[in-house]
Amino acid sequence: MGKSKPSRSREAEKVPPETSSQSSSWTSSIWLYGTFSLLGVLLSLATRLGGPDAAMKYQNLANWVSSHGGFVSAKLRYVDETVKGAMLVAAQNIKSGEKILQIPRDLQISDASIRQRSDLPSHVDGIDDLSLGRSGVAAMAAWLSSQYGSFLQSPASVGIWQPWWDMFSPPFSMPFYRETREQLLLVGSFEFQEIRRSLFWYTRDFEKLTASCKTKCSKELQMMDMNTYQAVNQFILSHAAKGPGGKPHIIPIFEFLNHLPELTSDLNYEMDDNGDLVVSAKWEIPADEEITISYGRRSNPELLASFGFADPPFLEPFWSLRIFTQVLAEKYYTELDIEDMEIDVRLATPWLSSLPGDIAAPEEVANSTLHTLQWELARGKGTVPTLLSLVETVADHFISWYSKDHFISTFRDTLEENRGKNASSSVWWRSQDASSFSRQQFAARLQTLGRAKRLELVEAASEADLSDPRRLGFWNSTVVRVKMSEYLCALAYKEAVLLIREELA
Image (cartoon, rainbow, N blue to C red):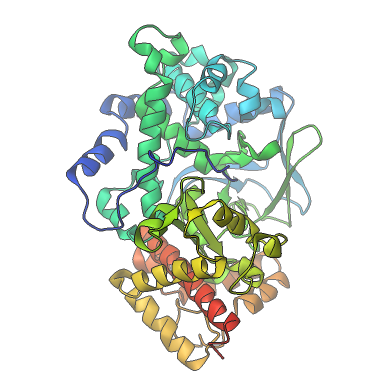
């Protein structure tokens, strides 16, 4: 489930500096554009709560899939209004290897599928400089927004897609919809800036898409609404799977499956040669247990950006961070012309072994994971830093910020205490028996266990986790886990640079 990098103009991409003080205009914009209109909320609630209950709506959707060439196992049951929200559970024991879903390509909402039934994609293609125009997201968002507006007026107007719309629910749990005071806890992280950037681009794209309606436009465009357009963009971000060509696909039923990290999730899934999604059980799943998938091997900042939550730190596969090139140019490289460079710089710990020496030409790192960043630097103009210098600057930026961030001070102190006992320790979420804890060994042990024992081991580790949501609350836990991932990524890169320069033992 991923996103293609958009093509955007540099001038429009300017963002405010990292600061906890917010202008009244931005706060009012969040209020104006970050939530549904009262009418939209009431209509949405009426749609979702009226008529059959959620279980019956789910069964209607499952029957719809089956009647159009798909397969939905009768062993699946939809459950709503739990602490975790909606989920799929096993109605009966599911055997290892048993197929539970097959969703045909024709029932998946994608850029390709909507072009067969709507003129909106052609309209989108004719508009220059949309934020996600080339990725297929802009056309999908326009179509979904129009369809939802039509559905709210007359459910039957969406034709065969009515069972899917009956189950649609806007993703109000995403950071984009958090109250301003909650969003401000993310200050210092790129993900805080990303929320503000999304607001800007949704507003700008919507205005471009509907500009012709000031005079005369198609009925499809007339059905679009700003609040709905933002909601479906967030829905695509958080619910779409990556299909052929890396473009997003919204897949009925499959979208209800919640995430667990790869080592503890229940299902395998793949696209077959026909483009159908086939889902089967990794192992036996007992009746009445929630059924989960993994949303991919992602760091906690990546999980937050796409899905609005974070994994337990002992199951996070790696650490990562992002920063705007604009921030780097304004704060550190004032002689660097970034006009032709990408909008952000990303670092992740799996790339550490690819770091070159202090002076390296692009061709010297052409086969490394960091070669894209090296080539981006080659596109810069003016005084361009070396790759190693840029990496160190980025690492120093985050270390400096997070060293003063009171929100994570307790966890930062725990990390320093554990590193005092074991310099290679990365454990910040527990203090007892922490200095010898190894994520690699924990993962290896999980792989030797069956489903029930794996979940027991994870629960035991969660009880010792100082960042567990049961201790901090869901959002505070998520923010802490994201910031500590970025802090550890910065520390790892800083120490790697020092090792390369032989300044660290």
